[in-house]
Image 1 (cartoon, rainbow, N blue to C red):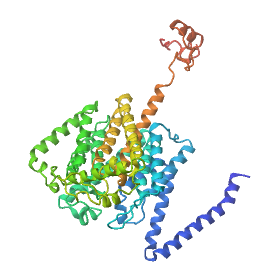
Image 2 (image 1 turned 30 degrees about the vertical axis):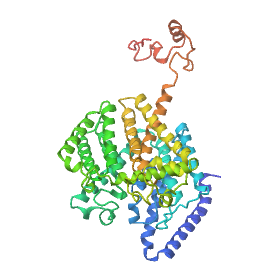
Image 3 (image 1 turned 135 degrees about the vertical axis):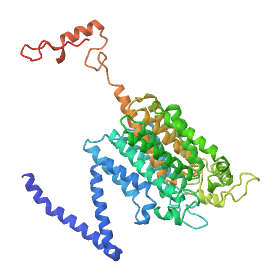
Image 4 (image 1 turned 90 degrees about the vertical axis):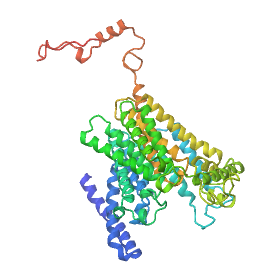
Length: 529
């Protein structure tokens, strides 16, 4: 039977299946929302087309996940359906399909990946165990959704690391991620500056102006200044990275430097000390390790120091809304939270109080740091230190597994910084960028529980994965046998004279004498050995 005949026999069944699915979708939309069925159908059609294209290109699917994480809160202004979960599942399917077709390599499993798997299992164990406290807010009665904590705090960052290794594994993939980061950070820079410069009518989403979670601070599309500061920090670093790459045009380079300055100003507008600290540490890392592109970091440090000196009275004041870093109110909150966490760790050292249960514990068993700290500071809020919060909810083993993942990735970044070539796009500069990204996880985790902020961990883990695969491939290339060693095609242990004799007996094509009929006869030079 020919392919054409088989296609004709299958097509009616395929058409019937597609038609049945379409009818079910139309009927469901008509019943659920008859007034909006036209708009919903158009959205379904666009989504289906995008999904079909993304399944054929895992890199496009990964960028869609990146965008879905960036706009997870903002997209609720348009549709109520959350897009991050289906986008992540679709990207995993696209990657699996590419591996099956031989277009991508299957993920490699090392110590970091096994630690990730163990930490995920420990989270799931806590999810299904019985605990004394419920996963609710005792004041409002709201559900804390323990599964969501695991998804955003564990599944999302670990999937980003694996997908970074498997999908963004070449220069094309890395450039897509870099420019996507630049697009997101540019938008965040624009709305952060417009918010404070009388351009509020041009800011979207509208909750940034109408219902900000933190008044007087640049909250961005996340309505959270820490996460907004993270994408601004990353955008600043990517600007310097791309501007210093060989081959970057003069006008492109000038535009990137101007954007970096605007982004650094937007970082200040977040009025968030940990974000500023992460940026300062990244600039310091650039000065120490950015071989060949150190000058922009030195210039930024000088400009930043000059700006602080010119605005010292405001910068070091306790007026947080004006950008002062001297406020102590948040410190008192964190002191009581740490005391409460330490009490929970002592009472439940192995399994912890249970995933997503710290809010309940901090309400019913709130502990005061000392008599000098108000009792109600930090009362009835979630943990504001990532690792201590993990230790309280998942016990000491859970905290050790998470710290093991971070240490393993940071060590990988360090080895990549030492081993990868210095002058290549995918070499040491990219390794430094990955190390800077992971440093933001460590620094931001000092003041906030990152498990609820998927974008705050997705982006750094994605960059770390892109670096890790380059280190693996560099090491694999370095292990390839060289001529004259076992496995290279030459007998091992040969002396220099023996190797020359062997080559004389087995000449290469370029070593053979030129044939008289060859037009190049008499002109071919014998290569020296």
